[in-house]
Length: 132
Image (cartoon, rainbow, N blue to C red; front, side, top):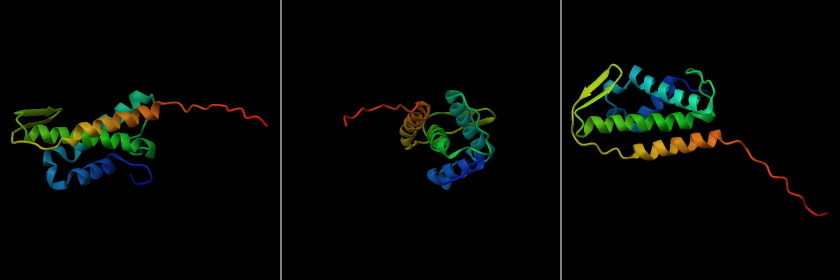
């Protein structure tokens, strides 16, 4: 991830670049993508008991939000392209079906959750006595 604070738009651009602009349906871009990212920021906030501003996500939370959001986008694309007839997310409703091939979503979800667990852990220190 690039240094500095990220906004919702930064995540949306990053996710679109990872997935490939031609693979992201128009119905998943813009405000819908930002809403997906915001939902994952809320997951991190709720899990860690912190507050993150959507216009200033610190670097240490960016990989978690990015992986969880990218996985969610890939799942939605897979659902759109597979045998699922209708996908609904708030105002978004997509009816279609083809045959998807985006299996990295589950790996990204797991990676995001693993990273989230790492953020929660308190550092542990051990005092070692040495003989002089």
